[in-house]
Image (cartoon, rainbow, N blue to C red; front, side, top):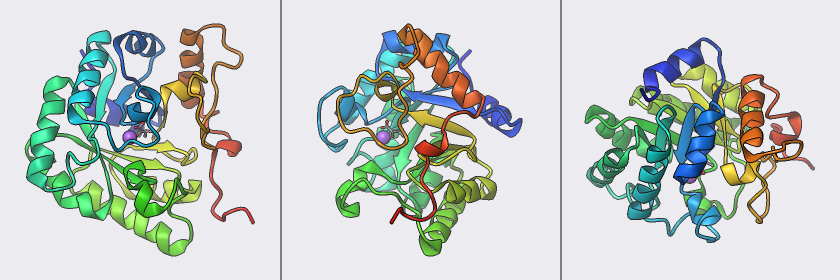
Length: 269
Ligand code: KIV
Ligand code: NA
């Protein structure tokens, strides 16, 4: 049986850290499953690591469906989470449902939507209709052009309070998981304490329910610029399988992320 959201919530409330990795194909899904990865995310990072693009914007729903199906065929236990690509959900809650339904049919158990307060209504609409939702807040790469770059979010009390308030609204709307990217660790801790849903961090410190990284980053396969929160788990490993196992172990043991992978409350001067 595939891991259910209730099982993940139970693990998280028992204090076990959840290990999530992105995954895009069946062969890696086999390895991730064997390494004990709890959640596989078919992320729109596939635009970069698979398609060689500079941003996630051009990834289509059909491409995401294809990769979800590939991953689902490769493993039977990990929880499968799929990104809603740019342009497939922002227009209306109806558009979001129609497209989310396709990802669920392809094998996803939950869909991830980038966005805070403006996604509350859509989140409720989807959850009420049988589509579990993961909310992605903080640095949302689909909004990189409005942010003006890949920048840390939630810095300063006003921005931090806004992030906490948004997370609460999404939680109340039924969001089943809240993912935070590139936010100061103390802000992520405040969000985690304020919501029922398990929280997943990427560049968000240790006070979250679990961690996620891009698979190609932990395997040091991606040639592009590396974010502060990335760690190369191939260093010291003798196989790809071993590297994935080392990541899962480090997440469970809370030895990853280290201080060097986190963002302090104040920007360095
Ligand atoms: O697309 C992706 O890989 C993601 C994670 C980095 C959170 O959204
Ligand atoms: Na993504």
